[in-house]
Image 1 (tube, rainbow, N blue to C red):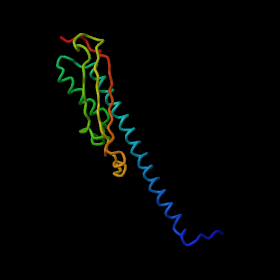
Image 2: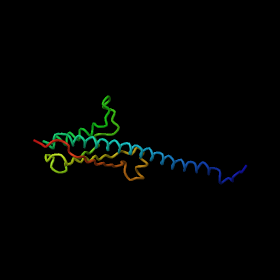
Image 3: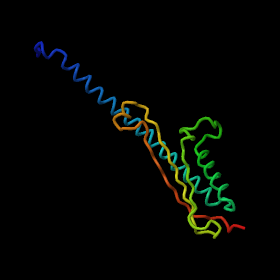
Image 4: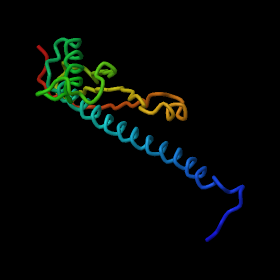
Length: 151
């Protein structure tokens, strides 16, 4: 069996400790990336739900339409049996609704729903490496207006 010299007595433990820091940082990054990917899918689906609502809703009052789209986006992913069980913070969602063309000109024009969200990073150490404690994300969905001509 190999016996090291006196100067090599804690080398394995030191190498293990340094490697462990790297592995834990990598594991935390994978967990945060997974949470960010999950949140992106949620906001993308919510934006799609808002765009569908905007495509078929009444367009006589644009402000009411925009409020309805925003409400639809914020409630699209909540659990109806438990409204407190929402996977992301709906207060941090920024919903922008844009009508493409004249909304009363009939079918063929569009509605674009953009949702911006920043997911907080759970590991403070990763935030210092990335330079921010949040991962910003944005999605934009465009749908064709299907509702009849405005009165």
